[in-house]
Length: 311
Image (cartoon, rainbow, N blue to C red):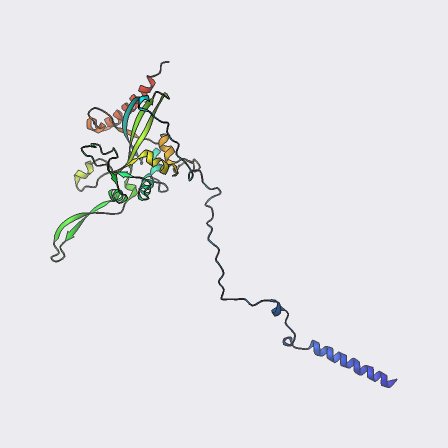
């Protein structure tokens, strides 16, 4: 019996030492299960960058003007024109009602120049000639480069001889265009009474930005504003229809420059009306009398329409 007990003790001691050896074994000797499940990462492979998605500047997207189409005017026959009067008027962007035309966000001159540069509009030479005394009949088109050179501020640059260094002359060099220098626009329009529709309405024919010529000396101060080029308004309507007007009171008006001209949302004064002598108002009126004459012509047009009806 004593021999059996000693045998059991030995076997129990062997089991305990084996278990201790297993528990005391170093971590390096144990098989790693985490390294076996994770695949090797290829560091040489480049990860594709996500394309830039520009966030929306606001909480709604303005699509109305981008897809705007011009509303065509009713067809007009010569036999239906009972009365017609041609009027030239000027719009001053320094006027409180017209300040949106000189806003840095959407200047009218910038819109016209960009359209001319892209070939969407044609600029016409305003220089008077024998066939075109006023220079506003759209007779001679200008290239985009010629139109740009006409609005650039020109500077007189001296020319010197390379050998002697003496001045041999001077040349007029075109400088950078300053859009703030264009503060007036001239509008050529016809006031027409259509007896077929019984409507007396104005129809704009052309628009011309004006600029005062830069001439040194006291003589330059007396020069009047002259057209830079003429733009045919029916051709420009589609360009103006997709350009939003900046409103100082409301950003959600959705008005375009085409709406402004068609709805007459601008202040202006008449500088000429068709007459037998082809005179401008400044040819026979001076000072404040020019404004009085302008209002007189405006009232005569309104009175002509009112006199058609009897009450």
